[in-house]
Each structure stands twice: as structure tokens, then as C-alpha cells.
Length: 428
Image 1 (cartoon, rainbow, N blue to C red):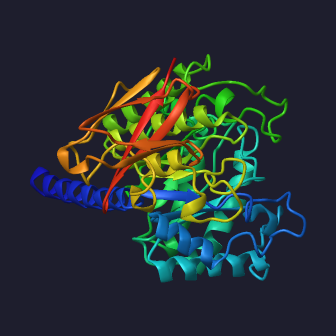
Image 2 (spheres, rainbow, N blue to C red; image 1 turned 180 degrees about the horizontal axis):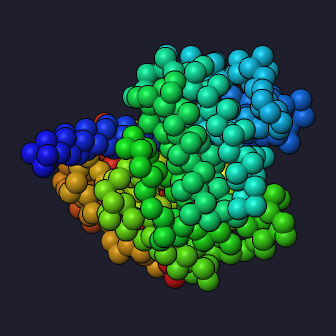
């Protein structure tokens, strides 16, 4: 009997490991992503769902910027009956819009997460009652989208569970996963713990038995900084909170450490599904925060999805989504548009160029090789506006910057056909 059981167990372990490696590969392939905010999840929008918020040119521009993946939050509760048999109105135009997004992402060879967001309000007191309704919804969705490429299309069961214990979620998820598997056995399914998918919720979170799952966490830490002055927070968070030194910076470390330690312990795929900083924060602090997040994302090789591109967390200066309109520090941090004209921490054109000290107070020195002598420099602020220009005199040029306010700046050095970019900080 033991001789029979052992090979079977080994086979099951191999199958499980292979399935999990598929989920890990798919998770890694998300790379850089964005969320489609204030659209199909925007139940507050008059005449929901709006048909003009996002169009094909937006997706094409995202692809041009270097975005590989889209996360599409949808308020499916608005088209799902609250009573048995929980009919789903697939004639609602929201499904035509979803189909358009699928067509656009297919055409552009992008990944897409279909995310169930808002209104279901799954909590400890009602999750057993909500479970069959959401299971039926996912039966409809999985059947509708079962023929989509499982390497590029993904199902996220429930956005940001809250006010429900992880032990309850451990019972809530599996029947829904089993329902999806009846129609889409090969698609990777995305789940997350409680506390609005905050990283700290991974401290006591146990993996689910399905081996083709991808886990996610969200990070708006410190929340008092990233969400300051935004109207949807009640009460309104006060403005003027800087970053770093917000008074809550330690929350960022705690939440990230919890999520990453969980990943290291269980060796399961994990990605950053939402992160963003609101535009009510001062621009220097926004840039500082983006640098911090980008360094964490890169150092841990995480796929990540920014929230959002054109709303309260925007990374463009105007409603026109173009390379010319992007905040330089966002392009630098996220590595967008090839990272060739905006910022940047590393230079491929000429690594011999050196600027110091960094941070600078009153004088910034530029050392250049002989080939860059007699060139010019331009200094831009974090908004991309040129604030100072001058000539390069010799292999070392001292630039007086005492007139510049504290913050992040970019210096562009040009000579002939060669352009070199560097980022520096003024800190007095």
C-alpha cells in the first residue's frame, strides 16, 4: 500500500508545483499596470456606466508609455439581483464596455484583470448570505469569458475585503473558486486578505488550497499623506502633510514587511494591485513618495498597478494623456516612455557624467568628460518647467542653485547630438 501511495503523493506535488509556477509566471508578467478608476466601478456616476471615460486611444497611449497590464474594477453588484436566483443582467451596457476593453487589450497584447468592486459589502455578519450571490455572479462571468487566453486574462473575486476576519474569508473564497473552475479551469484567480487588502493583513493569513491563485495587496501608506484633502474621505484628512516625515511613515514599512514576509514564507505569487498618491499633497512630497515606492517595487521585483492615471491620483498635468504632459518624476519612478527624456537616476548615454553633492544646498558641481565640454545644461523642476540654464565651461562646472527651493530637480546636459539626464535634490 505504501509503495502505491508514495508515487501518487509525489505526482500530486509535481502537479501542484507546476500549477503554482504557472500562476507565478503570469503574476510576474503583469509588470507595470494601471487601474481604470472612476469608470465601471463608479456607481455614483450619473447614468452609470459612462461610455466615454476610457477609449482606445487611452489604452494605446498606456501601451506607448510602457504599461503592460490593465486592472478593470467593475461594480457588478449593480447588475446582479439581491435575491435568488441572483440573475445577472448581461444586457446592461457595462458588458459591452467590458467587451470593448477586452478587444482593445487583445489588439494591444496587454494583460487584463476583471475585478469585482464595491457594494457587495461582504462582512462577518453577512458573508454566508452573500456567498451564493457572488458565486452565481462568477459562474456567469467565468462562463462568459472562459475562452479568453488564461495567460493574459484574470479574475479577481472581490476587491478590498474589509470588516471580515481572515478565518471567514478562508471559508468564503473556496466555493466561489470551485464555481469558477467549472467554467474556467485554467485561469488564474486573484484573492486578497481583509483590511482593504492592506499588507498588514498578511500577518495571520493562510494560503488557500487552490494552486492556481495569485495574491495581491494594496499600499496607500501612509494614508494620512497619500489621501490628504481628498473629498471621498469622511472626515476630510488635513492637507499640508509632507513625505517623508509625515508622522506616519512607519506604517509603510510595517505593511510592506508583512506582505513580503508572507510571500517569502509561502513562496506564492504576490503583486501590488493598487498604490497611489493624491494630488492634494505637495508635488515635491508626491515625487518623494513615488521614488520610495518605485525603489521598493524594483528591489522586490514586484508587478504593480498604479491608481489612477487621470483622477485624484493623476500622473499627468492636464486632461491630455501624452508624454509631454506627464510629471517627470512619475515617468522616472515608473520607468515610463522609455525613461529617456525625463529623469533620471541612471544614464545609458554617458555614465562618466557626475553631479555632486546630491542633495545640494547652494552649489551643484557637474563633472563631464572632454567630449561634453562646451555644452549646455538645463535644470527642470518636478513639473518639467525649466528653471535655470547655463553653459558648461570645462570638465567641471559649478552651478549656483541657492535660489532654488527645496525639492526634486532634473538636470539635462546637452552637447552636439548627445543628451544626458540626471536627477538631484535641493535640501537646505
